[in-house]
Length: 383
Image (cartoon, rainbow, N blue to C red):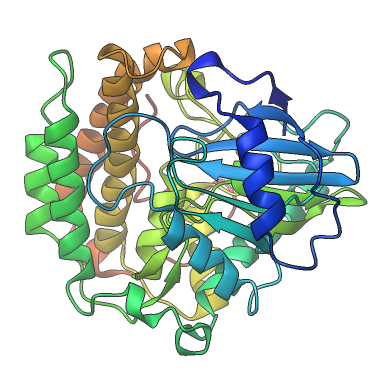
């Protein structure tokens, strides 16, 4: 993960932060906190901001929300800190927390500090210096999906995080919530998504047993073992974690999955190396996940999940694009997010059209592992 000079709009008083941290850090960080660290900013991510704190004795990570107005419940540092603190006792991939500051007078926003997990992070391409052949890439893909399986297997009650869930109706709440967010963030050039939101509302899948869900599970939130880059050692960015439908967590992850064979427009917005030889297709990921967990999902149900996952990515992109066009951020990498939203709406429409043409027999058939190269019954045409 690359750390760069802090953007002016995201800067904060490092001295004030260091003084507070020195007096409030939990024991056991192993780092002398009596000095003011060098502060760098990580360029990845579109929601909460992440910084590298370079102390003489080691590095820490600081997370804080962006400046400006936020919707109620968004960018909740105390919630994110609590999830990591409690889940780290049950899932070894979660970074340990060091301190939480809810006093906005220190740097202007709440923040928390955690340990830094050292290792390569896959982004649009494999990290510099990491070279994997087809078999190793396949192993990496399986191991990353296994990490999601491990998270969904955690005993929610044992973590003390059961109160994150709101009971039955999780899917309905997700559809309503993300639809409302899109309508609030819509700009003049954006598509309406009204047809897709109506379809999602009317075709919701059955209620499933709830698990802990990450809600932003992607390759670029996974830290790899420097000695074996096919093996994950860390999972980052717990901002959106909750208790809910695990298949929706999988669908949200696959909303970012741009694979070989996807059209040139989708390749423009690829953010992780899921195009490499050896990576599973989206449908193969679903089949593998179901085989590992015992879950069953029909082709008709997965069409719904797939549309929701893409729609949710579109909402996130539109929220960021709205911040850009209204001047809340000057980060130029966000100027193309409006185009990504339009492309995602097109993909959703194509999946819906394909779902409507499914025969009743195909619609009711569970997704299972298929022969390599066999035509998928749920994948949409390339864009």
